[in-house]
Structure formats: C-alpha cells, structure tokens
Length: 411
Image (cartoon, rainbow, N blue to C red; front, side):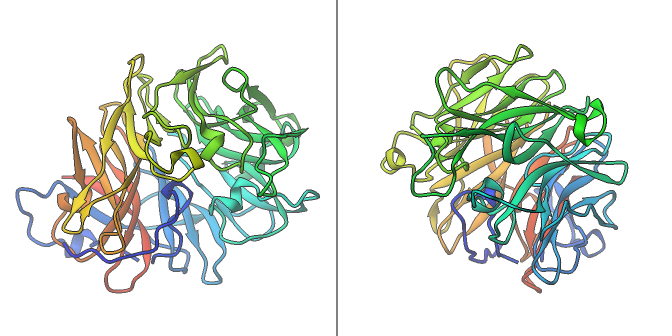
C-alpha cells in the first residue's frame, strides 16, 4: 500500500490537523484475499475537507466532528453509514467531539465555543490542543447532547469546561476550571486558572442544576483531568501541574478514580510527562500513551508510546510502534480498547511514512492498512473500537485528498 506524507502535530489526540477524504466503499471493494479482515466504509461529511470518527457505540453509531466549507467545525453523529447529523454548537465558531464521548443510548459529549468572551484570555485546552480549529478569545464549555438538545456543562467556579467521556448510566467526565489562580501554570502560556477532573450527572435536571463533582488530584498535585469512565463508575485521567492545560506536565501521573473518588496511580513507562490514559473497559483495563525515560522527556517533549495496563498489574505493556520501509516509527498512542482486549490507536512515522492506524491484539501490533483490501487510501488513525470489533477513525482519500471518517467492519 502506498502511504502519502502528511503534517503531524505533537499528539494525535489533539488533532493531526489539516490532512485531507479516504478508503473504498463496499460496492467498490476489490476481490478479498485471505489477509483481508475488514471492510472499510467512508462516512459522509458536512462539506469541508476534514472529518473524524471519534467514538463508536455497540450499535455501530459513530460520533465525531466534521468541518464545514468555511473551515469551522461541528460535532456530528453518524446514526448509520449513510447520513450525518450536525449537533450544533453553544455559540461562537465551532464545536467538536474530541474524545470517546458517546454511549449506547446515543448521548454525546464534547466541547464548544460559546459567545462569551474570556476575561482572562487564556489558551484553554479546546484551542491550544487543536480540538477547535480557530484561535479566539471565547470561552469554551463542555456539552452533553441528547434528545436533539445541546446543554452546557458547568465549571467549578472558573470560566472553561471540557467534556470527554460518558458511560451507559449517563455519567459524564472531563475537566473544568476553578476560580483559583494556580502558580504551577506555565508562565509562558496564557493558562492562569487551576483545573480539576469532574464527573457531571446531566440527569440532575436543567442546565442550572447539573452538578459538577470534583475528582481530586493524586497526592499533592495541583490539577487533574478525567478522560474516560466505564459502566462501573471507574474513571481515568491525568494529574500533575497546571502547566498549559494540555497534557505534558499536567500529566505527571496517570490515575484511576474508584467509586470513592480517590485517585490511585497507574504505572507508566518511566518518564516524567505525558502519562495519559485514554480509555478504560468494563474490566478496568486501561490504554493510553506515556513518555519513556528518554532524552527530551525532562523538558516535556512528546516522545510517547502506546501502553496497555491490565487492571491491578504492577507494570504497563509498551505496545511499541509500527515499522515501514522508511524505518521504525518513533511515537505511538493508544486511544481505545474493548472488552475483548483489542486496542486501537495511531503510530507516527517520518514524513514519508506518515501516521497510520493500528490494531493491537494477542500481543501483536498490526498496521490496520494491512488488514483491508488493497487500496491507495490510507487509514490515518483508529480512534475507537466497540465490542463487535467495529473501528472508527480517519482515512485519507487518495483521489480527492480529503480526510474522512470511516468505519472498519469485521468480515
């Protein structure tokens, strides 16, 4: 398969921004070979050149984002493989589903600009991390969408909030600012306020009554952020300094919060930064990415490897990186896993190899592109996998250059 080079941002979780449409539809599928394991279906867009599937539930419904022709972004839902639903926004320019923010009931969680101006002009995570495509002076708020209504998630007294995950009981996790001006914030960034991991319960009532329950950081850390929650109420996330509100030294520790809300540390790959859990399954197993103890880590360079942690294990498993004719990739990230222990993510190569989606199972890391019928399209990332083994992510169309959301269906 021919791989086309693309621009890679520091971390795929925050966006590999402006690549562009992607793999063949079932009707054009070439004759299958014994190695082919997946049929790839490209999902419709809102008219722009960028879309990404970020979450897939056990019904095969996909949530994510799609750009409009003017470059703005919208959180979207693909209720089937033929149609796309624009979920709207809370105001401002754009909205998105940046994480695994979808449950089996179709509740969607993400972030959106609002029309309110940020009085502190912070570089909040929604824009600094590339989740929203424009730099503005607008406040960003997490949202929950259900029954055709988008509702803002409250803060802990500060200005911004960020929604990441939701379980099948409707509990939402993410992070939100407090009113505390935090001295551990990076003085070279505009982040000023402390932020803490949060669990919200939208069932509590109207917007004004949604309750934000803070999840404390690990030990004496200043800040925390939650990234995922399972149906047992176990949440995972990061704990560390305020820093820049996007990973790095905010992720000095990967943590798990039990039902009692106490943070315990998840093992890491030995570095000092970017220890970031991305998903937790029903068994309490966790995947994510973590910096090893290698040159660059001490100054916060992103040199992470994908990891898998079996609940209760003393160590995490380094999933490694993919290889190509251009050499071994330097960086990888795991984004999601299912109850069968299948893990999906991304491996970053050099300019010639580019980013590629991976599947890890039975202790073997595989390029997802090698598991589909021959095509010049490139599966750039695998963002989520459901218990049926269906995968969503983004794929670059070799003909149009657009980057589209896809679903990989096991054959």
